[in-house]
Every structure is written in structure tokens, then in C-alpha cells.
Length: 317
Image (cartoon, rainbow, N blue to C red; front, top):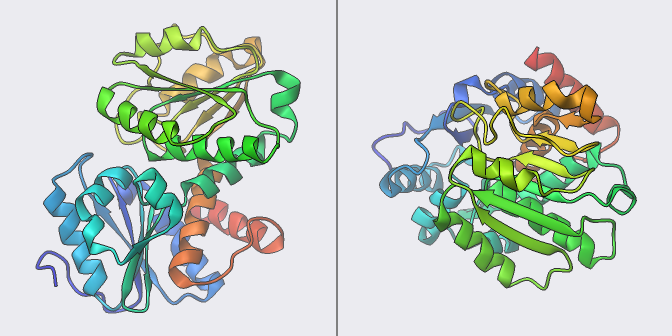
């Protein structure tokens, strides 16, 4: 048992992030717990981005051995945490194996399991604001700024859609400011027989992202998956960046200084942009994790999902 974490005295789930006290989940989860009759509380644990492996191991060892610690949602640290703790898990789901990341820790009896939920939750959030048939009608492409776990997960979701013969973009471009992670993404993409054209670009500076942005077709979807605007201030683009005409703009963040969204809003009327923040993604991401941790079914649409969304909006405000 870890010496750094006190044993839970009631059923507890954990939120692993960077600035967890600022997240709406700290007020939303208690309301959801009451509605779903979970009888559980939530605790936030903050690590620095790319923290020391020993710190990730300390936490995972604790949660594995503490009976009332039921599981966790992981943001920001999805790749680093798994890399440091893979041997502590009894099993990983297929997506976690393929993506080499986990966004959810859960228990199956005495066993600790890791799950990559982002291909599901990011897809659900995307479909909530991109209508069916959009890609074929618009000819738009996808540019994802940032090559973290959420970025990779969304590419997998879109590739799977294309493989099933469903509406999907013909081209996805991923940028990142460091080469190591970009190479990891490329290695995973190379293992997939993708009907979508995949490109990776090293963009150490916002001006580099600006240049890639100019090559995206009208109607393209531009995504901030960097964490800038939430975990750190700023935007992956400069204020001179020009979004594609009639494009879609999606920030995975819903809180923080949200400079990326401000840049898009400045061009919204003139460019005919449709803009989405990360709130719907937040809801789907947490619902997927809660369902896994508590071994319950929660619909992704319909009356119960709508009620959970209303509760979240009320608790957030």
C-alpha cells in the first residue's frame, strides 16, 4: 500500500489530471452519483505533465490495492501513466493495447484493468455536432493540432468509420511540436490499413501550425488537441492564422483561457465557421468511464443521457 495516499473510507473514484480542482466534474459528479445511486465520491489528483514514472506507479499501486478505490479517469497523462505502470495491470482492453494509453482504470474483482475510452467518447462528441453526410458533401478534411492520446483516438475512430463504408474525411493531418510523440503516432498509423490519407507534421512553433492550416480545404475541421488553453496558457496558432472558409472548429477544452476559441470566434461571422468547445466531449468521456468503473449501462442518447446532461449543466453553472 502506498505511503502517499490515505485509504478511502467510502467508495471513491479519482480524476488524474493537471488542474483537477478547476474541473466541473468536481461539482457534477456528486449530482450524478445521487441520480445514478452510486454512493461514491470523487477525488482529484494532480501530476505535472510528463511527471516522474515513480509518481504514476505510486498512484496505480495504491488504487490497485485499496478496496474502496474503484477506478479513475485519466487526462493529459494517458500515455505516460501507462508507459510507467503497464506491468501493474492485470489486463488492458484492445484499444489500450493498440493506442498504448489509458483513460480509465477499473477493477474486475481483484484485478486492475486499463481502458482507452477516447475512440468512443471523442466519436460520440464529434457526431453530436458534425451531421451525417457532412464529409462527402463538403469535401472537408481534418487537422488535429497535437498528437496526444485524444488526437490519436479520434483518428482511429474516423479510420474505423471509413473502413465500415460510412461518411468520413478523405485526409487527416496531425501536427505536434515534438518529434518523439509524432513518431509514435506514425508507427501506430502504419499498422493500420487506412482508407484515409494520413499525414504527420512536426510543428515546433505556432507559425508552423499556421502554415499547415493554410493548406486545408474549405469546410475542414480544425481541432485543438494540445491542452493549450487549459493545462497551459495560449493557443497552438498565432492570431494571424486563417481558418478555412465555412470550416468547423473544435477545441477539446471547455475551460481555461481558451485562446484558440477566441481566435476562431474573431473569424466566425466572416468565415462562416461552426465552433464547438469541449463540453459535450467532457460529458461523454466521463459517462463512458463511470459506466466502466461501476459496471453499469448508461445510454449515450435518449432520456437518461439528456437528464445527465441537464444535471451537468446545472451543476456547472
